[in-house]
Length: 352
Ligand code: SAM
Ligand code: DTB
Ligand code: SF4
Image 1 (spheres, rainbow, N blue to C red):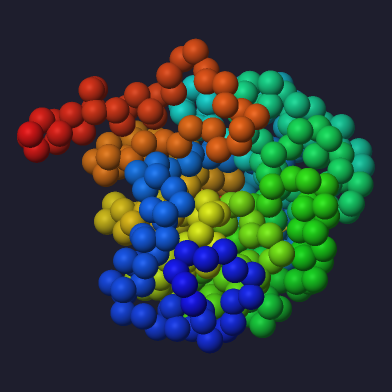
Image 2 (tube, rainbow, N blue to C red):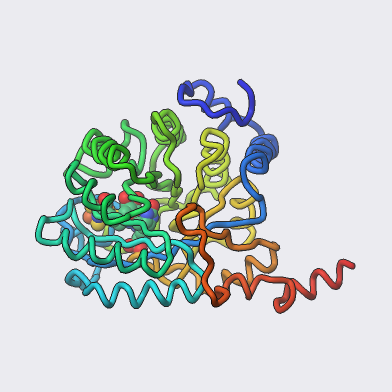
């Protein structure tokens, strides 16, 4: 097999072999593929907004928003369109280029479609890329969102087909694949990944990545989440994941899907800077930025700015061509990591 080739016929043996490589060899290969396809010092920056929080009827064992688990989360109604647009403005001013709106739904109800379409239109008018994650979509709902201008739809496979039943019983793996087909057929970009650290075997991480990498078209965004253990959920007491196994998962995703953005997604709050830096080195080139994910904590914005500055990482400009117009005000995160006015300047000066 030649490194960096775009393939959709990966065998389990191929992927097993990648995971079995010595760590340095694997990460070196991943970085090589990464550099052939991306600027290795740029990271895409997305901000999440929970447009409808809690009281979800599904039973996803990791999720603080399921109505079945007592996690102390207060349920909230669907946000008003104006309030969502206001949050998007703030995210844009802070430097995010993509605004991801998430709802704790099994699937959207017809009565909610008007509001979510309004949110997509309003956020797009700000010049941001839009993403939504609302649960399962039928063909018509996917078409309605695509017509509204939605750029990305997030729907994760979460884990391997084999382990899936241990985590979720209220919707099947096949249901998820159908939604992903509907999203593709409607012409939207696909954001699809999973979660590690849910007590799965290493072979389940292989199984998840095989599913993603053998899709007819690779997802444009591949979020790799580390389980956020939330008190009250069935997975709250899961054991710590070895950080090197997390990095290996990122590296293998990078090698299998060379042109996709691989997102270092949930779980950064408990990762040290070194682990995050290693994830970027292994080919992760997207993050969620902002102090909250949907309902749980994410690193403070200033901490992320410092990390970018210390690593010489720049936030990526808009990934999609239709959004190339630049805003008149320079986003904060870009300003904060430029060598002129950040701690990086001291580093560059010291190095010269
Ligand atoms: N309700 C919709 C659905 O599940 O299709 C959309 C929102 S849901 C919160 C989006 C994704 O967030 C899930 O598929 C899962 O991968 C991720 N997620 C949820 N809770 C998580 C947790 N505690 N740790 C890591 N990832 C989580
Ligand atoms: C994804 O893969 N991760 C994000 C986003 N897609 C929607 C969600 C992470 C949620 C973590 C738990 C919470 O904050 O509720
Ligand atoms: Fe509901 Fe989504 Fe949470 Fe599952 S992951 S319980 S579908 S909000």
